[in-house]
Image 1: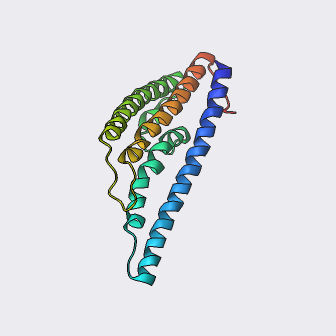
Image 2: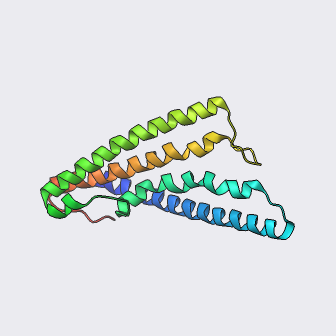
Image 3: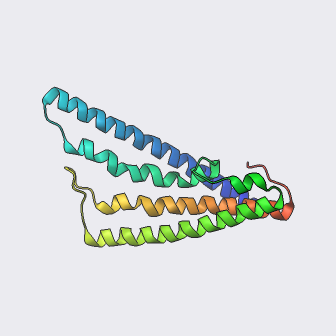
Length: 173
């Protein structure tokens, strides 16, 4: 299990790096699009609607893939009353239960997202921008993000399980 957990951590670190770079790139593209919109309107008096419409359509691709890395780093919104009150084995059991519940939820949302993507693919709808983008591309961020979250939940579950079995935390390598 130890080797599998080390491999899994490396996989998730790679995913974390990819999502961070992707999200930073998307944030930069959003700022650039809005800046170009302002500049074209200032200099020409008219602008391109897609400069303004593009950033909101990119938000899901910036947000959903970051769910897993935020969970792993503890940067997500959480209620931490009970983990601060208990320690030792009960805290490990609580973390295992929390991450198991989150894994189940992530899988449910990922499957629902896949169904939504399939529906929009069948409908063939396009986003109402000046450039034609299939609407399912935007909805694809939902199952991708929750799939990534499921992988991070599984890693955290395995870490909690290993700590319960061995009685000591293993340093993340």
